[in-house]
Image (cartoon, rainbow, N blue to C red; front, side):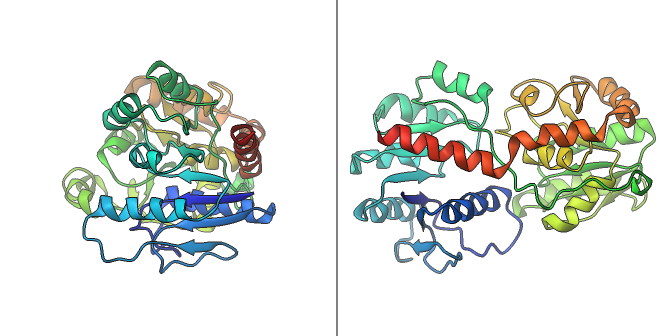
Length: 336
């Protein structure tokens, strides 16, 4: 199958820094190539990905939107079986340029703009692929065309449980430093439970001031530590050694790969309840769903009772191989 992935022109491979969304895409296309598919990524033409054809419009367009539309047009000028968009809504504006099938992975919670464009343009050749049933139900209720949902997959190979003697008894927070991640709650919970907290994640430029004002003053280097951004091999060690992963971010986050990665290491996840969270852990078995600070604190105290084997078994459902297989099935259904 000839597959075209279309992503923002601003993205260049290899990635200069950790970026979960496009690391996920690289894993998807790597496995698609390994399965014998012919894969092209339309992005910045200065990119390189092993086994993948890279194409992109020239950099002479000053308008970011026009630059990205130019990549769509270039993709449609080439013969592919399926076009896979990784934009929020731009595919709705580009859909009239082709009669071929466009699928788009919903990496973000649907914005008012994307829902409005879907309802206004109503293209028959554009299909949403939500990563959870919760988002799928939202899409259907708002008139988005979808064939179902596909849970995001994780390359589970770097993630392993450690010997129980290596557990460090500390809590862990993983993800970019941003207000919607609710890191302040993680700090409050760790302090109230009298447990150390390690914070791992990059600080986007636009949130540097937020970090300096709201997070940095609470970091003392011992009880609360900021460890910077990490690649997966090092991150996996921190997952495995942690008492639990705290995940109190906004319920409209699209998925939550870090929760699956932690469980793959045998570490329970303590999550904000609501939204799709019930799809990402088994409450009381691989972690806990919480609605208040008090529930988070109580769950921290109970987290040592969670069986690591249950966490690992549950995480297997979210393998990258399963996800790639589901996307291949979806492509075939839409092309039939």
